[in-house]
Length: 565
Image 1 (cartoon, rainbow, N blue to C red):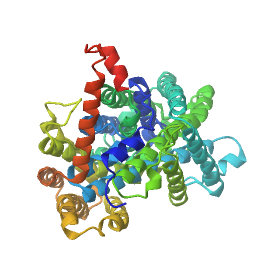
Image 2 (tube, helix red, strand yellow):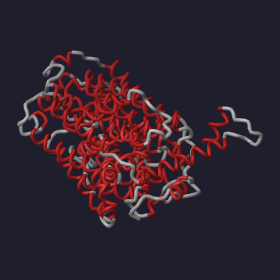
Image 3 (tube, one colour):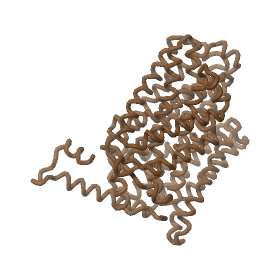
Image 4 (cartoon, one colour):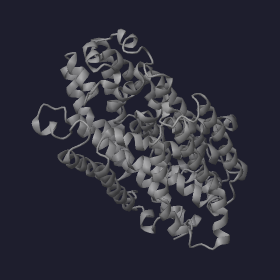
């Protein structure tokens, strides 16, 4: 099917979802996505790149994520539909820009699933058993490690197979554990050893310069971690009161995670034994397989090490389970955009689970696991693909304010005209900080997905296809220009050095703003937006009718909320 579903058909598929997730469950979904494998490895990897200045990298990452998340919160509340993140570009710019954004977002999210399994197995390799130590060779999983990780992928799959209520109960319980253990870890390590001299020695606070702080934001797993704010948005079709619960869940999950990650980073920096740093010669020379567990053992906290080994299964498994759920909703969204066969839009009536989409994502997760066997390599790919998907949010939110000002917006920030271009700048800077040639490689991956778009779209008449190409040209040009700037940029970001230090960042800011305004001006009232408007109006009419009972009296607030659920 080459065109999006009609409003009535789409509404029929969504009626099989269960609106059972409240603010707490959605916050647990977001927080559970953010606190996965990132907290087990992120502190060491960020310190290896930026030294003690990694503390600032986590703050910068949170500010970037929060700014971008605000744009998506308005969009998510406007369109509380499954796989929300893959839809917004389609509504504002049509099929080309919508598909590129959806492809980038899906690649970023689906590759997290094998990444979480890889993290669990990598921690397992520190167990004091010969078979366990053979799971990881210091750089990537061995054959036996891949086999164990494959079993975990199947486990994530089956946890999502049966019902959304099972997912919600399991995830909330796991998230509580995932929050408690990192807090305990940070506190215990700080009490066991807090050596502030680590900050002063081995190059000082920023041993690799401030450019390394920015690179740490992009590549150390920080973007990987905060990307979890998407999960509540992708589960929007199952939210009881999306207008209120979605923005609260997104913002709360980022803020809580920031506090936890800062505590863990400080605990790691002050907890590394001085002799280990001396032997390594630098922060980058440290070589822990299981960073926090290894530090626990170094300071005699055997109980904490055992707890961390257990949590190395629970935290990543909880996140893997969440992403298995959210990516299946994303596949449903891509199918309704008109770019996948109809089978992937089917939702099981009994369980409320899109089972065919779950199966597809399991297959893709196996492929990623076969190619990328190390947590670090997966984290880099995920981070850059994530940033590419981010740039459509700021453009889409302001485009839709221009195109459809009367559309109901449960969340509408007055400052959005300022927030949106800033979010575009932040996203572009993080993409640049990702360093050449990685930026070029991930942008090339974006091109790999175009044949699928072409299969569905190039069969359309030219008059029908032309406005989609015209409206989406800004995003194609943006990716090409950013690849060129990354190649020509400063050597501290992997470029050829044609742009002097400082000038390169200014150039990226100007490019980001130019493409932001181009993107907003090129949006158009395409068929997907028209259908979404019709569906929103039909829903609003149904709610108005439900708000009045048989005797003509309006319902109370509590009754209205219940009717909307």
